[in-house]
Length: 354
Ligand SMILES: [Zn+2]
Ligand SMILES: [Zn+2]
Image (tube, protein in one colour):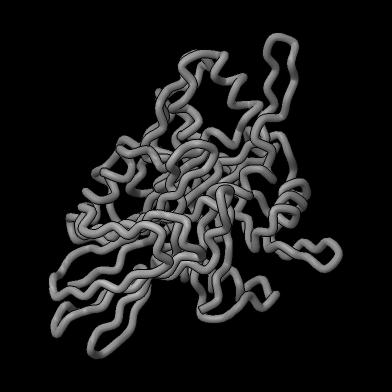
């Protein structure tokens, strides 16, 4: 099946990013992603969707928005909105009403950075999601590269260090967010996981040093959402937008940290008596199901989880097959060593064995 690499969740000068849409398109092409989804804060910016081309390369830019209630203190509950086609920031004061409006507009609603801790030395407040009574959203941003950065900034010196060595930051999604995802899945709900960069191309000035930390292009080489699609991108914007958003809504995707090694080519599927399914799909446990995963290479540790618990681990194996008759929510994680540390590499969406 074709696979489309999507980098999503980023900001331009229309909100608090430092670059413009052209910069983002250029960075997307340079990094080799297929799609970028721009999500400025509380504004749906018109007129930039489409294919951007340089020489023989191209990237599809889609425009969503990141909505939150700016009158709320602290400014929590950020929601990523994709494909709604109209401005919805007016509903920001009620997360549930906002989600309902996104659904009504045919869009997708994802909870942004569910856990986003404070970084007091940089005057960054905690902007985690609070309103867990909300329902009917499509999923959560399991891995947000910027929230993770905030977890490693006890002092300004740490900030300066990671500004110069950004490759050392990313280790894995915040563990509390993974635990929350498993908890949500345990209720029987389908909750799609996506990975976002939250790229701002921030400018930092400290002790006379001026530096753009986390340029867009760097972000686009790190945490991506890989969407499995029924056909390759056609080059026709409306067709491709629909196909990508349908894939994300169905959970036909995985989160890949592409910096240590490309995650393109990962698959997680299930074969039953009557049908074969992929991530995000349901299958009957009756008569047994064979779960199969395959990595792009074997230099990793693969874990199969059932209902949030690791039930089997494979080291340096490129694929596995696991036969089960037990209902449960099955998902795969892969880890590999990179720059002296074991790091999260791949987080699949679940297969729901019912
Ligand atoms: Zn946010
Ligand atoms: Zn953001």
